[in-house]
Image 1 (cartoon, helix red, strand yellow):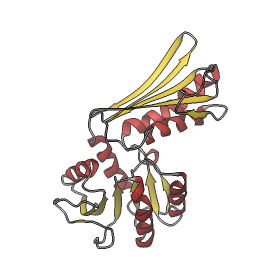
Image 2 (cartoon, rainbow, N blue to C red):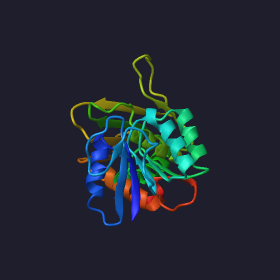
Image 3 (tube, rainbow, N blue to C red):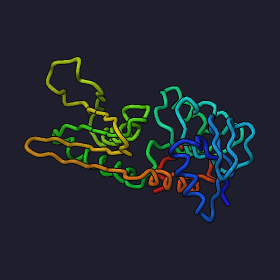
Image 4 (tube, rainbow, N blue to C red):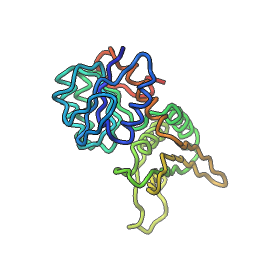
Length: 248
């Protein structure tokens, strides 16, 4: 039985993960951590220190909690499935340093569909980018999402960049300039409103034709299922930095 420590247990995704985990035969949530504890089917603590032993941590919290979580996992030698987005460059460097001591699986999006989409975008950019197609990314999320653009949009931009012959510039705002669109850029736009779970669209715009690759999430359960699959994969692994590409 894989014992999971659920970090961010009382948030939206924490509740979804807990609900799905309750029906799994090989995995159980041993405890949760949340600064605002709520009654759940397992004990929930305000901090990490009093938590019982676990085999892996699933994190759906916030970027501000990442530093303390990384320190804790390194100290306890706990594998970490890191799903929080909006991490700074310094925090990403800490993730890489932690992965030298513990297994860390970091992904801004845990869904099977998105991680398949990454491969398609990389391949499309390799073909269409050479032919002069412009690349734009539009992402849409609910009004409560704190970071913009989404971590998934940046993952898609990185996948497109990997397929291009030259490294592009990411552009998030064009309001302050009056000029034609440079070729070597990827525009990334964010929409926030209502209860949109998550929509991502990669647009390849060429001369007289447009190719669009898109993904729509209708339920947060797809991210929770991916996180549980990642926890199974990571438990018992050697130190290193993993991604959902390894899982799928």
